[in-house]
Image (cartoon, rainbow, N blue to C red; front, side):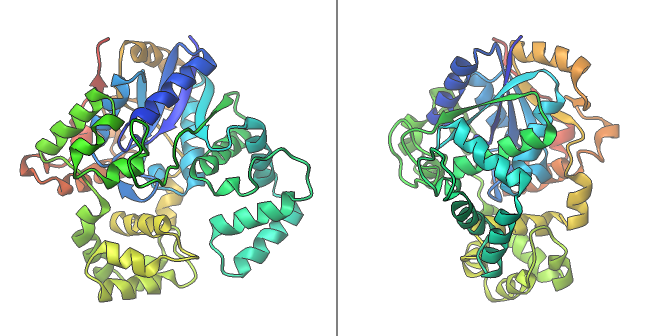
Length: 404
């Protein structure tokens, strides 16, 4: 058994993801493929367009053998937290040979070069970074400027000195940082992203970005060519049943209620809130009536929209810095779905994994899964079909099983 791991959101799964799966298998010659996938909420501080079980089924339809859920708190973390916890789960299984991720850079050597700087943090680099942060620049931008300044005198074959600003490169560097920090035996492989940017909002044919698909989701037949038929069918059926599309605006009223009801001190205690940001958010909640307007008001050069979106979810779910600290380190491996090869993986990791494997949660798992359970309960409130708004789905829903 040769196992490759991938880290995904599949929001929703499209033809570009199929390309990634095929290249991952071809490049690593793996016999089995594991995906660690975000749950009902994803890293940009948004809900999945459809629920995690449907997205797991999409993955199993297209060549993934085992889908493991990334816990809620990790799913909505910054890129660093998201990547570290995902790699930690793969590493804990003690059977994964490779991890394969997409990047705009396409060069593992270049990505490793940057990852080592960020892990070791040479004093000169730290001083440069501090200079940009003190100038009021957001951390992602400050890091990019600091890296550019630090490495300009180094001879290195980088395609683009600004490559750390691209979405997949950022994640790639964070995966490599995690492997270094964990001293993991997993060997990384990168595949160059093709056709378009992650942020591309317009459909570009069969290979279109997830952003463009979500942007055009209300005209559902326009996205048909960008997805495998089976996945388009699953998406359409969920929409017909009133189970999507779900967006952050679906939770606008309850988020605005929480922001108006809570104190400034509560907002200050949340993850990612600093430098008086709690006051800006509180004031905006009083002056605006929906989350889209609030995000546009509060975000800017220093506070990217994705950071504000994550903070709104932290506010809704009560993710203070203390909660985050207590729940951040993965303590279990939650199975969302598997096929026959996935069953083989499960049989092996039950013996090798350093973390307990949870397929069907029971009463002893409730505290560990506290925020996964709550996230599903809140997520279901966005459904237009009242029959599906019931709670505790995480304790009632078995893993998806696809018989090959």
